[in-house]
Length: 136
Image (cartoon, rainbow, N blue to C red; front, side, top):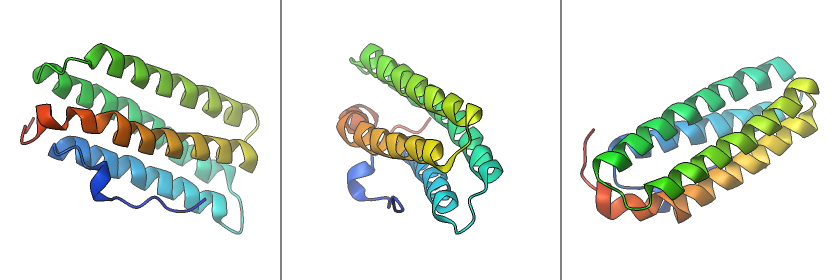
C-alpha cells in the first residue's frame, strides 16, 4: 500500500474542499498505518473506518452545498457519484464488520484510496472554475 501524499493536482482551488480532501487522505493514511503495523488490531481499524465514513458523508454534503451555491451544472451527476462511492464503501465496511480481517480492511483501503484520488482528479477538479476563490 503506501501513504497518499497531497499534491497540487488534487487541489480544487476552494479552501474548505481542499482541507476536507486533506483530512480524508489523512484518514486513509491512518488506515494504511493500521494495516501495515506489525500487530493487526481490528478495533483500531474499525475506529478509523468509522471516522472515515462519517467524514466522507460530511464532506460530500459540504461539497454539494458549495456546488449548489455556484450553480455547478453537473451537480446531479456528481451527487450520483458520491452516493455510489458511499454505497460501495458501506458494503465493504459491512463485510469488515461481519469479518474484521486484515484482508477485508485492505479491500476498503484499496477501493477508497483509488476511488477518492480518481474522483478528486477526474471529477472534483472540474468544479475549479466555478469555486475558485469562493469562501463558504
